Image (cartoon, rainbow, N blue to C red):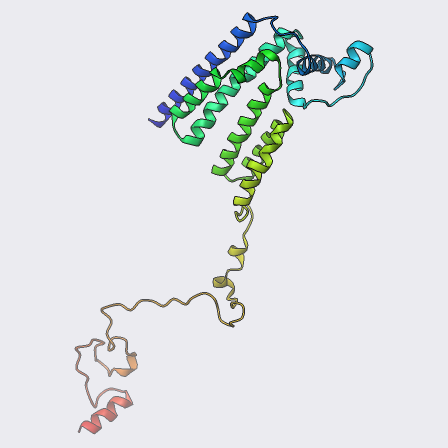
Length: 291
């Protein structure tokens, strides 16, 4: 039943993401030529083309207008490297780059739905979050404008999702994955540095006493039960002693040593002691006094 429910969630979420992607592609093609390249959008477009040609991270205006090879790191590289790959494999036109950004927007809608389901634990929450993200204009407008926010939103949501995954599975692998995704988000836009003080650092503070399963802990090695170390300042062990509980059926007579009883006497509270017989000297003395 759970497998069928999970499959239903993923199918519906994929359908919502595809609708969001279709809307982005339709809008970009419909509004083709509405926005001219200028500012950061022109920088992303031309520098990604230079990267695809093997020229490295150059200053596009200096190279295009003056032919000067001037290294530049004016913008984070993640979005530029993505567009460079698109330029190398598919094409270098403005429309191609804008449609490639639409793919990032559609993936962001999908991951937002995953994150909402992870946080709230309900399929409906994931679907609703995906619908809102697909219809939110401040997300899909970046695809047409050819801005790095398309990559920034996707990487940031993935980083937050991996943080929740790390909280559930506290392993070195999940911690490394979270760090890698935060790093990619920062390499998309510098504003993602806020994830460190507001997400990574609080997680580290809350888990500062957590011991990784692969390393032995001090409590496992040097506990007072195993070492017998006394507590500081008292000279006594800090571990309380435990004694076996006395059974209700146990009587004082049944706890007597065997040598208290003469030969043939049973170890029961109702047995009558035999005086003057046996090998126990106390019993012999008791029999002489009674005589």
